[in-house]
Length: 171
Image (cartoon, rainbow, N blue to C red):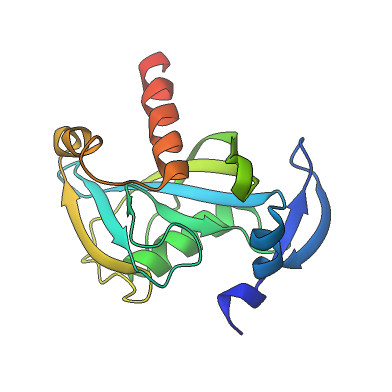
């Protein structure tokens, strides 16, 4: 089964499931669905940053400071966060990511998606999926901040990062 054939829950403005469709149709029609964003830090507190491959369906070749992806039909956010983090990092036995908050991301032409933001510490050696990740490194947060205006970032990840900074400032 290709990524475009994966079945996703379609949700309303209150994040209630109202249907199911293949991912390709969800993207083509801009249907509201669910995603997870997991900020991964290593033992030294550095953030896992990567550049997406050119073959990605959404935001190809852009940089991201989160791992994650879509929540499958019938899958809980927490399950998707752990699954996506382990898949993208190429690890097994990752601690369960800690849920932080959820927000509705709206991207006009591309649609909107409910976005659950998590964080996790990964002290395992990572071997990211080559079909998902073209480049990766763990960068100090100050370096990520310096790169915000230099690199082209995925817009939903950038929105999640800005909300995460605000969340931490009020916590």
